[in-house]
Amino acid sequence: MTPKTIQLAGVPCPLYPIALGTAEYGSQISQDDAFRLLDAYVDGGGNVLDTAHVYGAWDRNGVNGGYGNSEAVLGRWLESRGCRDQMVIGTKGGHPDFATCETGLTRLTVQRQLRECLDRLKTEAVDIYWFHRDNREIPAIEILDWLREPLRAGQIRSIGCSHWRPDRLQEAQDAAAKLGMPPIQTSQIRWCLALPNHTTANGKFGEQLLMDDDTWRYHVKTGLAVIAYNAQAGGLFAQECAAIALSDPTFPKPDLARSFGNPTTESRRQAARTTAAALGCSINQVALAWLLHQPFPTVALVGPKTVDQVHDSLRAAHVSLDENQFAALSARVEREVTVGASS
Image (cartoon, rainbow, N blue to C red):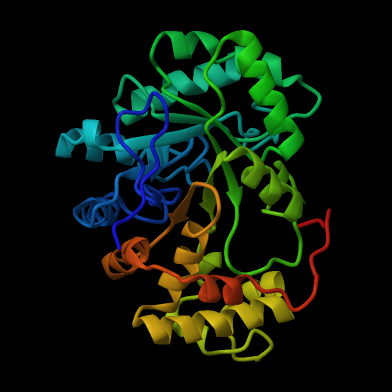
């Protein structure tokens, strides 16, 4: 199967369907190890790198002293490999301050963060710039206007939203049209084959959204592309976890058991095991292939820690599911998800 790429208006390169998450680069993952992962990813055909202005803020001992650890590593790698023109670089701004939780969604903050992102990444433009959070008290037309000049100046090639609800995504689309700007082309949201026990998490940095029925239907209706982060459910479909029931006391990742422990997730894990055996691939690849089989454009964002994991994830782009397999993976035992839980 030939991987199905996605072409965004204004972005020179089509997006490979498996994107590489780099949040821990320069912090938990050293620069040398990050370079090895990046080289393996590109050698395997990948070209989409996901980062954010806030990535690394938790580690002042990182390569950039905190904020921008990830972007600094990517900038050094891009410069050393001379491959900027072959890559799709996405970064995010507007996240609340990591120390004070003060909002990052202001004109001055977003524009300052964009300048810092470009400097760290050693590039004149980012291919996708996501608003990292939403603030429903600010009209979408005001938020989008903050990026009108950077778009005109060629510093941004496309705009996306992360953790925006469907009504706000539509408000943003309508606002872009009124402002004479290109439409929002991508939405980044937490989504994986496992069914989470909650569809929102209200933490100290504001609301984090997970894919729910209303959001899924909005993407079916509009065809808006989804960049699905946490696509591997934190390792739930890795070999070490795949054969152990979430309810088993020996399950190696109890946090995942608490987040995804429900009958539908167990049913889908069993369907993934059956499908993987039939196709001769890994369970992880089946879980990622399910995301890529959706009725609207999707890119699965992965966070491998080893070169072998990079190779395994990339092979998911070559896995083809038939409709029976997709239906079995999508089935629900019952509806367990609750809304508005705290984390």
